[in-house]
Length: 186
Image 1 (tube, helix red, strand yellow):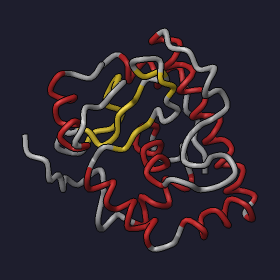
Image 2 (tube, rainbow, N blue to C red; image 1 turned 60 degrees about the vertical axis):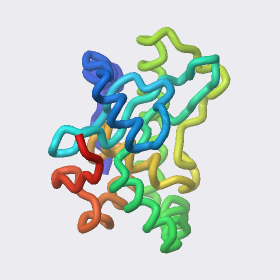
Image 3 (cartoon, rainbow, N blue to C red; image 1 turned 135 degrees about the vertical axis):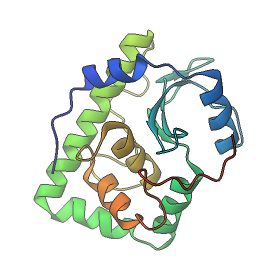
Image 4 (tube, one colour; image 1 turned 90 degrees about the vertical axis):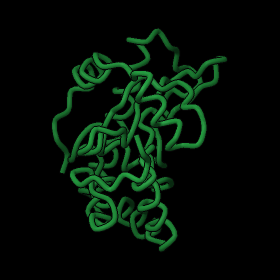
């Protein structure tokens, strides 16, 4: 099921609250490295810590970066990794290839991702020519990275990405954005 999401309004809403020094410090601790190009927090845990961030399409130094919705929560990353390790990616790819409703919703997720990134690029003065047409996670024809698909569902909301939503349903006992299981201290 797809929902109506206005990428312009979503980009405005998210960029109205740029990443703070505290957000960047938490994400740096989550990732174990400085979060280059982090523009804002796109989704937060029930406790307020970042779950996924919105990253600039052009990183410092002019490096193109297509993964606009980036999963940072160690608990979410671990949950996605467990699903990937279980070999479920082939099942999701088969679903995208064979189920017309899922295929259409996944193609819509790809277009939504591109439109959202374009709005972020325009608002931040970035360029997209090196990543034009490339979204994330294998969209629109295959499932390559569940982390990216979950991040899109978290940032844009349920209905934005059918596979991201399915993975969130699958890992609910291990990771749920409405339940704080954060392991990173303040």
